[in-house]
Image (cartoon, rainbow over all chains, first blue to last red; front, side, top):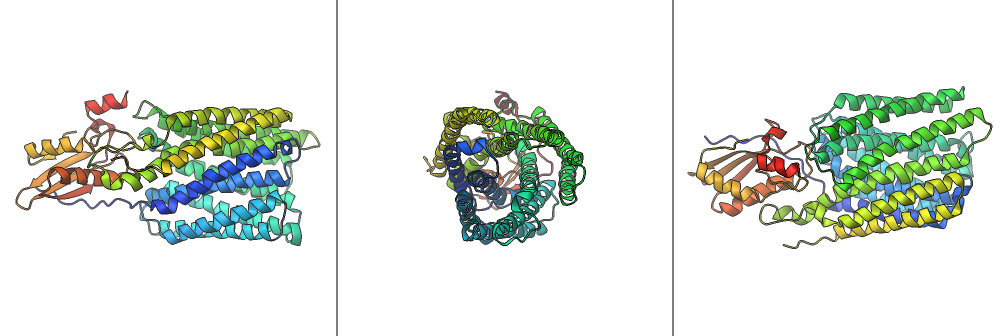
Length: 429
Length: 107
């Protein structure tokens, strides 16, 4: 009997032309951030609110973290929602606006020019996020399936948009006083809306799909993911409320506890996926990504210590606050990107180079498109540099800060080397 | 899992060809992974119908794997028209992997 045609159609991948510029910009931003870090190590012995630290934070948060996530999301969201990306043009617009905006913003922070460079940079970044948000919203509205992962991505983007709007208002507030208090006052709100609302929500939403997929695990638990989603968003809303209506400082533990439970749930989710994996051998890239999930606990624990200090003593522990930011941006976010880049980029390039050749002759595995020994060296150098720099911040030791920064710069060079190697891959068949 | 077919000889030739099509992430071929459900040969219309699945519905490499299957069949049966359909009914599960495949994954 000749079987009837099935009606399943595969989701068309987003063109590599849309995605690759984001990856390249992110790689160069990581390099730039580590150069700035090496050039500004003395700044890490003082207050966290100073031009060089603001510039480094925004290079890492926007140029590195956000750009690569935006790039990967253009590729992954259609897969998550089982529908095509609404518009490639909007994706290009997002990239161009963000690329220009981040450059202007970082320049503005580094030289503390809160006039035109930072203001225009802020507007460009806000517009880039808005065009991404529109693209994702319309793509989702055209999808017939509801995906918890896509809801994570969409909500995270709304938080990013709000974070960027507040950031823009803070920039204007330096010269035009449009906010009731000074810009530093809003830093906690701006930072946590970005860290928890954007990065945590998005990384959990995407990783909860990718980690089981790469481990070839059949584990799936949408109920648990919805609980995590509710916990994180509740934490953010409680935090915003407490920020706007400050009262008892001890109440700040409520959002922290909610986020902490969400993280524990997510670690449990990853552990179940790991236990139920089909592939026994776990590659280096997934190991680094799983390590980053555990690294999530460190900043939360540190935050609890910071708040205990805040309540029990009169002053802020500046080194602990700096360390908290460092653990998040150079620890958790950087580790997951270092791992996940080599689980996503080779596939995007493989699709470009070998798609039409598949099945006709032997094609290389995507994992063969980069050097695993460079990856291993990068991981060792990165982890060592990260630990040394973190201890350097804690004890205010310049020699550790310098050594750590040199190692992080080396890790960024090795990362870029492998990224360029993948991007320039030519078919050998 | 056994492949359903209406022509054992051609099916065997087709499966040999399909052993060159790898899931790029796993590195295992689509036959040992158990992704091929059905291979029917319509001699009258010179048409091959292949029903296959993917390890996950969200596989970003799905299009490439399905195209790889089509290419491999077309290369082997050049005077046939190839129709590849991806289905998730039934959904793929680990029991569909061949013994060879299991050995490969447990390495």
